[in-house]
Length: 319
Image (cartoon, rainbow, N blue to C red; front, side):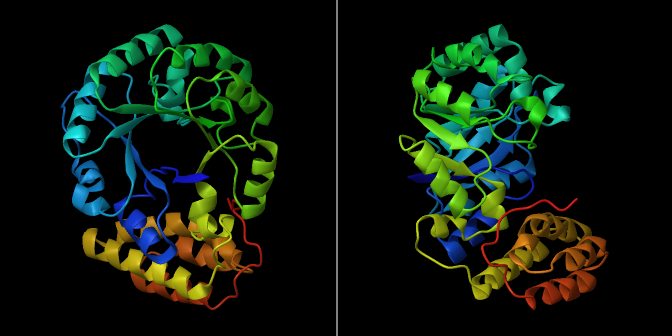
């Protein structure tokens, strides 16, 4: 089974990827959070850092693009190929309202004629591998039959299917029935994505879909950075590695970000997921969220690390 680490904007940047690989062993593939080509035909400073080969040494990394403009997409793909990337992933899965309203991400799935023309231009004009991350549709999973007809016309290296529609965002159950139907008609290698938060979830998925050989993990792997090892039966989560990972990431952000506020923002995002590793963590999570200075944050994090790890920890959302 190939395990890929999903891209989450603002979290799974190069610092996260390198620290994760060091403390827990590398994922089979890391997907870089989406880059946004635009009319300037330039990557931002943040994007340049995230795709820089020196920041991704030793890792198998796939950059992702979020765009509906074929010419800008081809420019970005060519620049990425020049940097040594042999595959580029296209994001047709992001369900965010601000993205969808621009007909990007999963919003692109509402206009299949335009999507078809886009893919024709991109797949014809790019010599490297093109993969896609997709939703099942906008409103209803029955839309995916028509969407898949478009995908099947092109030589994709992989189709990553998040088994929800756009309107679901990340709520409710994933649609395994629709995923099963897609498996039977898709001409490309298929990677599954959606709600595999624990090794038990993964085991049940494999029992249901033994033919699937590629899985993408996101929120569950961020919440429990040792999830890949647990899935493979290699390791047991321990506090020393969780602490080491945290401390290294925190130090990297302090060194590379300007001021306390962006560092706090990054660490608060991380704890939104990783608090679930610790027993009785909700009160301390509130302290972390209320921290306005690094000294306050450090005291709250120290308190969190004094709590025991949660048996069979799994991702859960705290609003």
